[in-house]
Image (cartoon, one colour):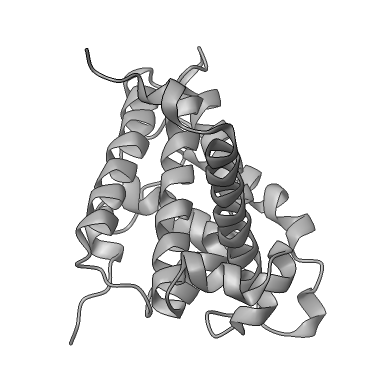
Length: 217
C-alpha cells in the first residue's frame, strides 16, 4: 500500500515550509514596493529590511538580483491576470472593465513596467507564458464590453494597457510626491472616454500588446 505522504511529513517540517513560503512572498512584495520607490538597483539589504527578514534568508530564496527581479515580474503579471479574471464575475461588462483598470493601478504596473522592462529576459518562457495569459484575460474583458455595445470598438489590449501604464506612472520630480491621489481621477476620465458610442474618431489603428513590447534595434 502506498504511503500517505500527508501523514508522514513531520508537523515541524510543514511549519518550516509554510514559514519559507511566507518569507518568499514577503520578500517579493517588499521588492515590488522598493523597486517602485528606488528603482531596480535598490540594495538587496533594503529589500530584506522591508520584508523583515535577514540577508541570508533573502539569498536563500533568490540567488541574485536577476532572479529576484524575475520573480517580481512574474508576480506582478500573475496578479494582474487574477485581477482581470476576477473582474469577469461582474454582471455589467463595462463595470468589469472599470474594476480591472482600477485594480491594475493598485498593482503599481505603471511604475513597475518601465523600471523592469530593461532588466528581465523577455525570452524567458515563464514570462512569455504569463504575458500571453494576461493578454487573453484582458482581451476577454474588452471583447465582452464591445459585444455589449458599451465599449468603443476601435481599441484593443495595447491601447488599454498603454493608457493604464502612462496614467499610473509617477511623474519625475519631487513636486509630484502626492501623485497617487490623482491616479483614480485620471483613470476615471480615461474610462469615460472609452464608452460607446464613441464621440471621436481615433487616429491610427488599435494597438496590440505586442506593439508595446521592446524590440532591439
